[in-house]
Length: 144
Image 1 (spheres, rainbow, N blue to C red):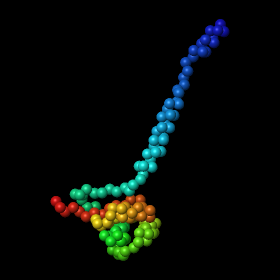
Image 2 (image 1 turned 90 degrees about the horizontal axis):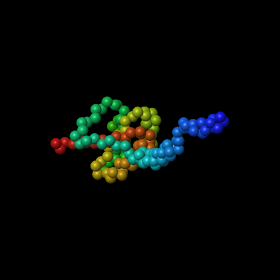
Image 3 (image 1 turned 60 degrees about the vertical axis):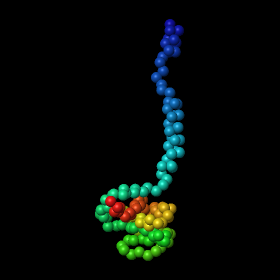
Image 4 (image 1 turned 180 degrees about the vertical axis):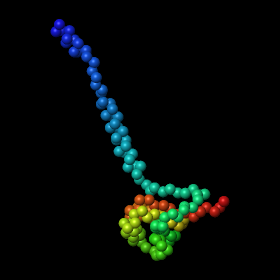
């Protein structure tokens, strides 16, 4: 009788799940996401309008326009007053303005003859000053 009880105990089904393969898959996925996540956050978020886009409705009164002209001089337009300033001064002023009004809309006007890198430098300076989103101002396409 003792032997029959021992044989029953040895053949009992095991109700466990081996989770080691699942852990291996999760670690591989974690490594993949850790490598690709920094690549996804680089760059400047720019939404360019189509050539036939309708003009934006001016519903907000608080708009700050940062400009760069063909001579590569920087300007800030807050209410019609414009004078050339350096990029460091522009970043400092925008930072102070955004500390008072963080919901202010920031737009960039760049002369078409200015190198692309200078416009990107202006946008990076604005983001460094605390602007979460920076928009681009374009002229309407009247060649239709």
